[in-house]
Amino acid sequence: MQRPRRNRQSAAIRGMVTETHLNVRHLIFPLFVLDGQNIRSEIRSLPGIFRFSPDTLLREIETCMNLGLTNFVVFPAVADHLKDKTATHSHNPDNFYLQTAREIKKRFPECCLISDVAMDPYSSDGHDGLVRDGEIVNDETLPILARMSVAQAEAGFDMIGPSDMMDGRVGFIRRALDENGFIKTGILAYTAKYASAFYGPFRDALDSAPKSGDKKTYQMDPANKREALLEAGLDTAEGADMLMVKPALHYLDVIHLLKENSDLPIAAYHVSGECAMLRAACNNGWLDFERAMPETLLSIRRAGADVILTYFAKEFAEMFPSGI
Ligand code: PBG
Image (cartoon, rainbow, N blue to C red; front, top):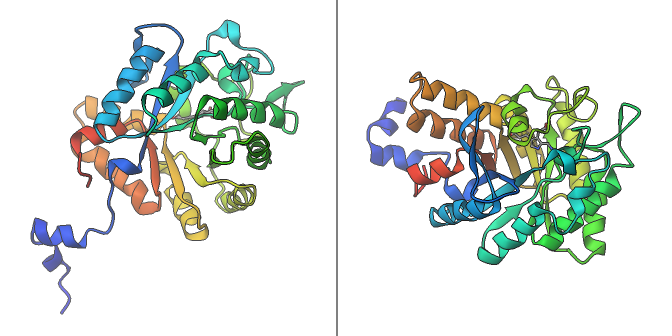
């Protein structure tokens, strides 16, 4: 007679039969950096998450490293007067983003530092690609992305994170990195990135919303699943080291699909709007953060994510130093 409750009767037995584990080493903490000094400004639509100037960012990273949280993806908030049509600031080796990366890798060589590659933080049009006559053009964007990637590799990033969804960019970037001698710099490909409403707080943080139109001609249709396999096949063939699904919670089926169909590690981005929803409910007293947050991250792992990008990474590390 099967009685599944026998295996649930004590913490010791439950501990033996736990199927899914989550440890801080699986997490990547997204961080926002802006130029200046001594700044730590909270994002209105994502309470508990801050924009840091380079000096305060280094202190934040130090705190995380001491918690065992070693993986970071850094996004720049660029001043409006530095934005232009072709995102020239993105590959200026003296820009504060690249300088900060150099500083981070100098102070914390053992961390894994991941970049963001896309034009939107640096673009006066607020799009991830080059805008010509109202159209986001693909092939002319690729050299810009490649130049940005090489500048980031030079600054010491361990992995390049193309989040732009242009066709062919992984291969284009891989070739540019190799030609410049950066054979060890990895690519975390935003493989199935959807045109989602859940990026709102992120765009608030970076002031990077598109000036006109939306991102539907390059990001994926939320209705589509098989298309994620097409993207995964291309990114794999083009040399990606990890495949990402984004957002995570509303796309658990896509995470599962890629996990079943790929031999590459799968990452999932628990995006700003998904974190904001949970935070809002917890701050209202409607949900218990200490329970709802780990359950949420566990669901993303259970779906098949090896790695999770989440704004809750630091709090997870604080609350569950030895994992769950
Ligand atoms: C843009 C980019 C976005 C995010 C990461 N990179 C937003 C967008 O595509 O508009 C969103 C991440 C989040 O919401 O947490 N290159």
